[in-house]
Length: 114
Image (cartoon, rainbow, N blue to C red; front, side, top):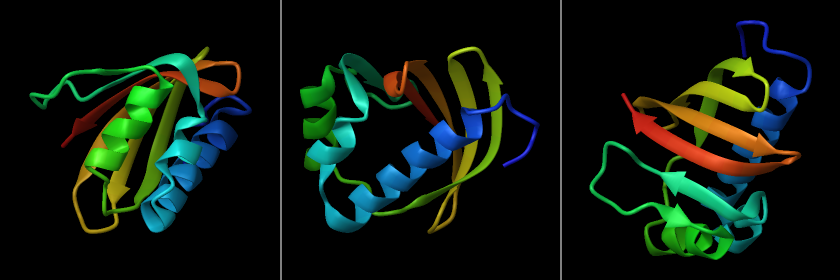
């Protein structure tokens, strides 16, 4: 990861990506969803899907349509409790995640595809 993000940002992003990749491999989206606050929001602004609001809704959304590709974080840009992460998929393609943190948990996740 590049762009000299503040201390701790790379660690929290790396942990999130590792947990996502583990869930892709083992299908345990409930465990992955525990990384989110109880009232977290997950959005896909480019897709015609409703926002997933709440940890349980996030787990259910991933369980209904589980991703099949793992991701690699390429660049992290951070300001305070918000990280913008450029990533690539293992099968090709790229995107950007916007993560807003509440302590060590994700409070909001916006995912855009390139």
